Length: 88
View (tube, rainbow, N blue to C red):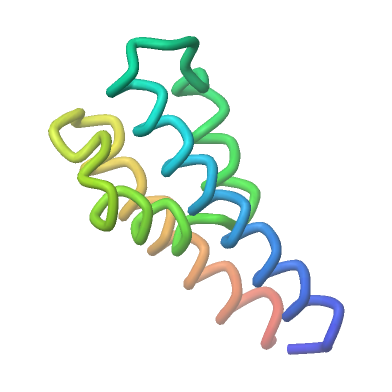
């Protein structure tokens, strides 16, 4: 993994984690929320680790099937893509 790839990975996962936290805080206050599509797109953009960490740290979106199943599936797909495409 190059420094650029590592930097991207760290930034996108940190942002995803923070966005999950922000959305949870806003949900508690019944304020405007981050769209679910945005949360899923952040995970697809490489932030699946941050999404998983955010889900369980903030106890957010853990009961929704599209998150409790979808985020781990995205994570597994990203591992395969990294292993078989990037490292190949």
